[in-house]
Length: 125
Image (cartoon, rainbow, N blue to C red):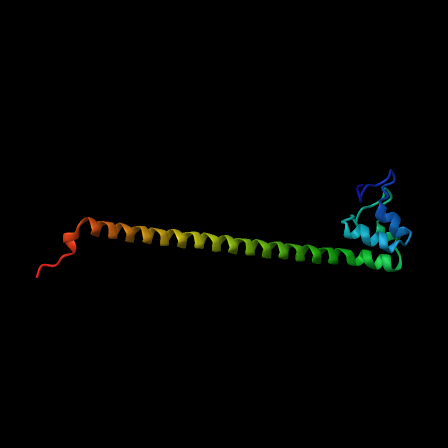
C-alpha cells in the first residue's frame, strides 16, 4: 500500500488522519516517510487541517526527519570506515605474511647453497 496514494481529490491517508486528529496514525505515517507536503486538488496539506498535537508533530517532522537522516548517514559512514580499516588490516597482515614467507624461503635457499658448496665455508689458515 502506497502511504502517499491520493484519492481522486488528492487526499492522502496522512491528510485524513491529520484532519481527524489520529495522532498515532499520523506519527506512524510520518515515521514511514509519508509526504507531509502533499497537497489536495484544492491546495490543502495535512498541516492545514491539523490541530493540537497533530499539528505540532507535523511542524516538527521535517527537522526530526533531517536529524534521523543525518544520524543514519553518520552511522553508514562509520560502518564504512570500520570496514575499510578491517580490509586494510587484513591486507597488511597478508603482506606481512608474504614477506615473512619470502624471507624464510631466501634463508632456506641460502642454507641449501652453503650445503652444496662445503668448501666455501672453510677457511684457509
